[in-house]
Amino acid sequence: MSDKRLTLKKRLHILKHHYRDTKWAPAFNALHTFLYTPNETTHSGSHIRSADDLKRTMNTVIMALIPVLLFGIFNTGFQHYAAINGFPSDFSVMRDFLTWDNFWLGFITVLPLVIVSYGVGLGIEFLFAVIKKHEVEEGYLVTGMLVPLIVPIDIPLWMLAVAVAFGVVIGKEVFGGTGMNILNPALTIRAFLFFAYPTWMSGDLVWVHGAVENAGTPDAFSGETVLGYLAQNNVSEFGHTVSDMFFGFIPGSVGETSTFLIVLGGLFLIFSKIASWRIMVSAVIGALAMGLIFNGVVNAGWITDSSPFYGLMSFPFWEHLIVGGIAFGIVYMATDPVTGTQTNRGKWIYGFFIGFMSIMIRVFNPAYPEGVFLAILLMNVFAPTIDHYVVRGNVRRRMKRLKHATIIASTDNEMEKLKAETI
Image (cartoon, rainbow, N blue to C red; front, side, top):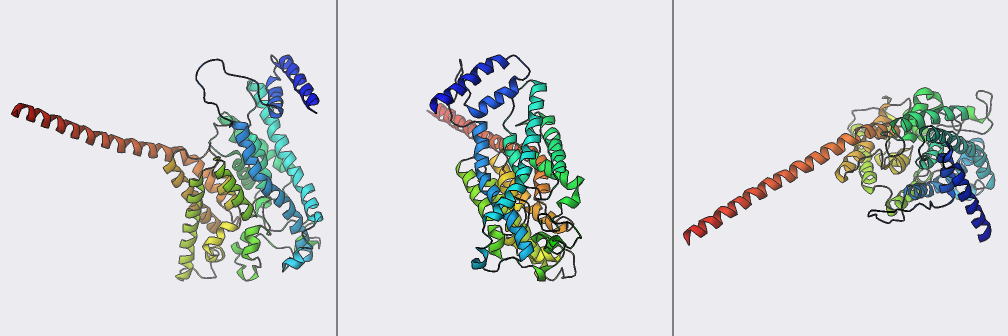
């Protein structure tokens, strides 16, 4: 086995010299570094040795996303059979739903989304690398995995391809590529789908495999997402338990339903020092604060059940964190180190406003009761401004301390002179 691997490596090394001076060098180097560690070494200067690089960082995030992806595949099939046969009421019945059929149906449905996301996105990345004659960047490795997890399961593949092309070109390449973009590319893709094809993003029906609208098939009577119910004030018809919502047995985009697995992924990213815990904690605080305000408004009687906002306002403030895409957005999107804030104090401000505005947009936009992606994109724009004022505030405080220290030093010198003259 080692001989075969060595032979493959030697062949790639020979081909690398062959393609070195051609326009296809970036594409070949991307394939070579994907399979093997680059053999380039530094020849001068001082350098810090570290086992971490961009590729390993991206791979760590992908590992944190794998459990969410696998559960999303299962839940796709699970929701299909639950819409047809009814949702199981206890675990003994649920065991009949935990079958290979659920996973296989979800697999053949979700896999095309992953293929289109990576195929179109990496194709554009390779094209720009060849045209601009620079190395293929690893940034899209994570974006390509995020995109299938934040879209509805029934999104047409051509629609997803158009959105990916828009997001990679406008949200990433226009600004210079990985590390230079001001907007999260995955959320740029989601925003394009939302504004260009809003009816496909509404989540007003549970996806059922093979169903045809208005043809007497199950999707004619299947339920909505949790937020869809609440946005239409169907509180009395709401049948999901807290356990269902926390573990993910609810309709929704592929990767956003299981808060349990998202939390585990977030802890893994914090432990590996990839994501900022400050942003996560502050975003949760902001979401809880906005939810408490809305609950207080309802409890004070200022909003009645006739109001279009009553369903989401009266929803327990902490349960907002376990439905919709807010948990997924906080853990995997808001913590993007490129588009987020860089200062520690800025991270607290940045995260708080993401959580705060996510719940605000969710409540006041009943036509599309989800706001985390809009909140993150808005704060992406303001992240440099937040860091700017945080840094300026730090500079002002240090200047005041320096001025105070100068005055004390000057006073001490004068005292020494007086003592000398007295002696």
